[in-house]
Length: 330
Image 1 (cartoon, helix red, strand yellow):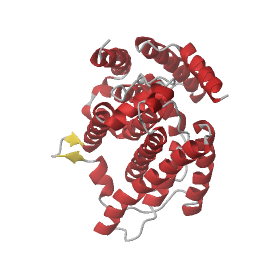
Image 2 (image 1 turned 90 degrees about the vertical axis):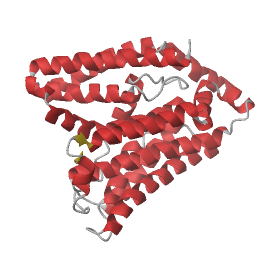
Image 3 (image 1 turned 30 degrees about the vertical axis):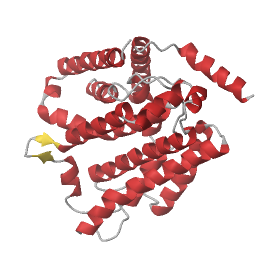
């Protein structure tokens, strides 16, 4: 099977499910099809797409990043506590400082994992607690300020018609798709996720690649943090908590295997839409919050089963690969 055929098998089920849910939403509520509602959807799913890409990069190496939510909270808090509000200097700082902090924190995660030989799950869980503490120290409660005009600049429209969140989605997906598919760094990510031993014998600097992968995860989480500060026009140190597990769900539904080495980011947009559309439909139907969790869980399991099957992923492979790794380490 060629790479294009594999990509097609990953994309078709994701976007088929998305279209099915979207049509269902339009039938339930005709106004759902309006351009204004779709712009609202672009605005809401942008941070989810960013963290979905971040988690995909990490999962492709066979790892996991549970600090994504905490990094979003930290960078969000930093974004609204920067000095020189309502000046061009503040805008530059807002655009550069939080993402750089995200990159730095992510690389620290990668260094601890690679140099210490610790499981990514435990490391990122531990660092998320530390990061959350720092965020609460910076901003003990929701608030803060950002430069006037940033919100309009981020959530507005280009030429009066093209939603800027949509442009951001396309740009980020395009850039990180190119990196993943057409650079040595991207090929190294797939090689490490496929078989670390073979990757090492091929001359790939595994630890270096992993450090940068977690750095990319932190960088994208940082961008999600500043985006949310613009949308909310304020900050919240705990705003990233919902994105921890959602990022994993979006990555996996998008066709990325938890085994590592299989998947990509082209399905992220569709899987993020699936996630957001479920919330919208359940709210339109006025379904109780208690039942919403059950319905979303069941639908996501079905979507996961379909997309994983199309990608040729067997869940038994996850446990088999884990067992092999433990034997090698032993």
